[in-house]
Length: 344
Image (cartoon, rainbow, N blue to C red; front, side):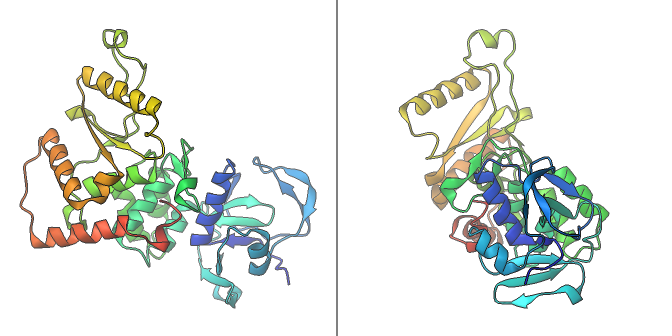
């Protein structure tokens, strides 16, 4: 039986849909809705601008319909409803009551009979089950220059951010009655915009989360922020602008992440070396990490110590609590984890 009301995907199912659309190079948010829309009959499929484009489709859908029509969804399908009376129960569907569905900014339209909760609502729904560090990881991913993927080698880089930390923070502050809003705001405050890949995010979190959460507590950098050479420097460097992965402008420090997917060809290795030489000739210190450094506790500790010295920070005593928190954070961010599979 097909439901008469538009299906509104909740947290994990929303991420799965955004991942799928990113892989197709489609906008994950053709139009935003100020409220949940009830359907009034058959309607045409819509393009990215929200206009109908022809062939009628089924209006509304139950979980079985979407699971069969869109195999990228995993069962159970998570849907949002605005009151307990509308809950649907079964092995293939889990309903989440979101009483704020009628409020502006809670729902994003995707098609004539399908919508998602907004990124901020999605993040708040994860707050009940994820530690603060992982919640912050999703916040970075939602506002990063990369999109989710169903598998790591499918991550879409150089993408338009799905949202911004500023927008998510404004929404959460305006809707503090949402369950999990307070914890979600903390996660957003710990994140930064503009990160370019899942491992750039992991690198940032390991270096900059507070020590009590397992990070090294370094000050926040800028992510992929442009550096433009001056007139004198432009005569001797190869690029007009540089976009370092992590930048502390006051300290003139750059940290780069070299991925095995994009930095292993001879041409790319040569370009990376020339780029680093150019940034160093402009007075920036450059430190590079790769996956083998990040995944090795010993190598990363040495790398982080070099970054600390470059930032001019004093060495701090490693307490037993800090060591335990660091081990837990590394486990959260680096160990295989089914919860994290959509944003790494």
